[in-house]
Length: 202
Image 1 (cartoon, rainbow, N blue to C red):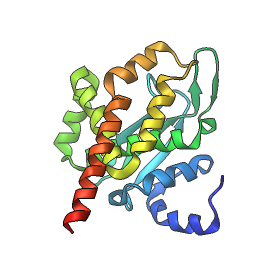
Image 2 (tube, one colour):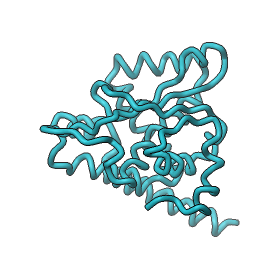
Image 3 (cartoon, helix red, strand yellow):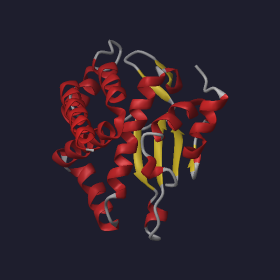
Image 4 (cartoon, rainbow, N blue to C red):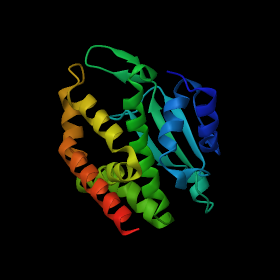
């Protein structure tokens, strides 16, 4: 369902310094709304024809980072590849897209909390160490959950793990490297308890 005019104006703030494909702008703006810290952070959401082993990738813009500034790209596969076919990525359910983008924004939060040397170490660790890769993916999931995207992350995870037409190799990778649905439910429960406790103390 498209944004109403009122909802559209509510989300306009999160368009600042962003490059957003029209076809998925609602999902992107919704995901961004959970990350007020990134309101003015330059982020380009870019469709790619072929992203190896991934559906989306959040990456620092190296040319900008080396100048001492911050900018990021979130590369998005134009096609959602299934075992025997593929569909345009924008045809997956909106809530799943919001969760997926929310996870990638979690990576950007992780980058934002690192200096340039830390970002370089992150890149090397991500490529060459499975242990580091697992930690990075779980950290991104945790950022998303802690920013209120727990339900979306859970929906995305279940969508992947229970999808009959996704390869078992890809589902195995997701199960191995990312927070499990049970982990997400537990993190959401802990977050809710913390929020209740904070309200009682205020």
